[in-house]
Image 1 (spheres, rainbow, N blue to C red):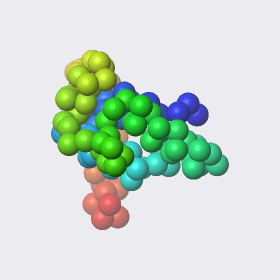
Image 2 (cartoon, rainbow, N blue to C red; image 1 turned 180 degrees about the vertical axis):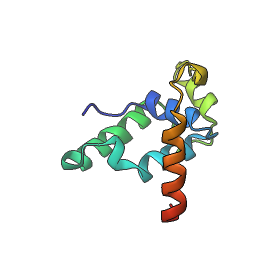
Image 3 (cartoon, rainbow, N blue to C red; image 1 turned 45 degrees about the vertical axis):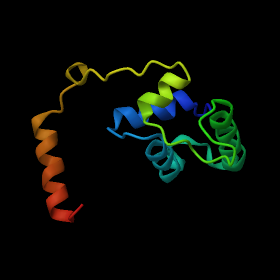
Length: 108
């Protein structure tokens, strides 16, 4: 599993409709098991934090700057991309009905 980049964190946050880098970072940390290889978690988290520091997205106390995702992307010269939702495959109606029934039956 390749290590997560600062650009990927910003893009994921942007795609999820988040506004600030603190939100994007928080969501990455909340879902660490999806973004980091668990047997190397400590090493990868340290490396990720080092990347954030190197990108200049923290202050002298190593606290995330109060920046929007767009401002942070501009700061590191990264161009956020828009998701073309229409280009994504459409879910089969029968599958959607199955998920809906399952959700209603289980309360999930």
